[in-house]
Image (cartoon, rainbow, N blue to C red; front, side, top):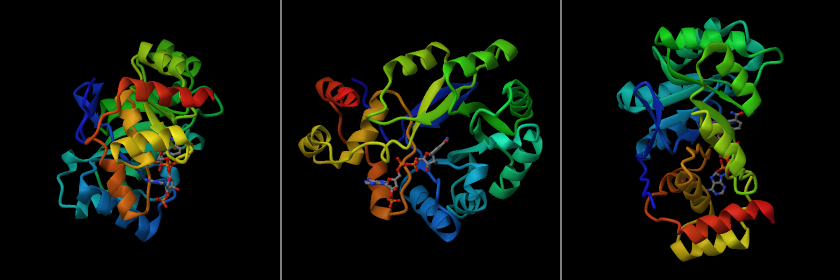
Length: 261
Ligand SMILES: NC(=O)c1ccc[n+]([C@@H]2O[C@H](COP(=O)([O-])OP(=O)(O)OC[C@H]3O[C@@H](n4cnc5c(N)ncnc54)[C@H](OP(=O)(O)O)[C@@H]3O)[C@@H](O)[C@H]2O)c1
């Protein structure tokens, strides 16, 4: 079994790698966004997930700058709201201004726009080629929608950020994404899992970790990058400390089957 560590990364191609554990920032705004991201960076996170829609890019950018880390040490993802289709350049310019950086590491189409995504995707590729985003991908897309982008441009989204959790485990979807060379990145992983499920709490007890740590570790051992959000320092820290134990194949399989109960 692989032994991913906190600094484990997934390869997105073209020389870009993304840390497996990132810090989610949805619903963190203002001073609490700044404080949470500062703390996350202090304890070791090197991957921050934001979006135009979260209205916290300025706080995320300030926290990264104030952390004293080099820009190149922190992987930053942001996202284009679907209603901004047709205004891709203005949107990335506004994100970069708010973040106070010359580039983002990953830029995602947040949701499929109402009309075809192809023109948006063409702009994403052009903006990546100019160096404003090191990698480009999508979020909340299905395989048919991804195939449309690949057919039209010959370029795949390197990431599809989608809900992923114990009850939502979907090996067929994971296989479909992997066949296309698309990395599944999981969101709402804690929120959408019953952290009191006895199977989960028993496994957590055996390893002397929290149920949330088991959920995050299960993602990592499936090769799925994960971006837990918390406003609480103890949880921010424990959600990152998921490399000191390893789930057995029996435990992985028991967790996989929670979705079918
Ligand atoms: N692409 C998209 O459409 C999309 C959609 C949703 C989310 N996302 C991204 O994914 C990130 C994560 O998803 P999410 O924020 O929806 O949900 P999440 O990270 O699964 O769960 C966050 C919730 O769980 C609580 N929590 C955090 N750590 C915990 C722990 N160790 N034990 C118990 N409870 C814990 C948090 O409360 P406290 O803050 O009080 O700790 C918060 O209520 C977002 O922040 C965002 O960056 C993307």
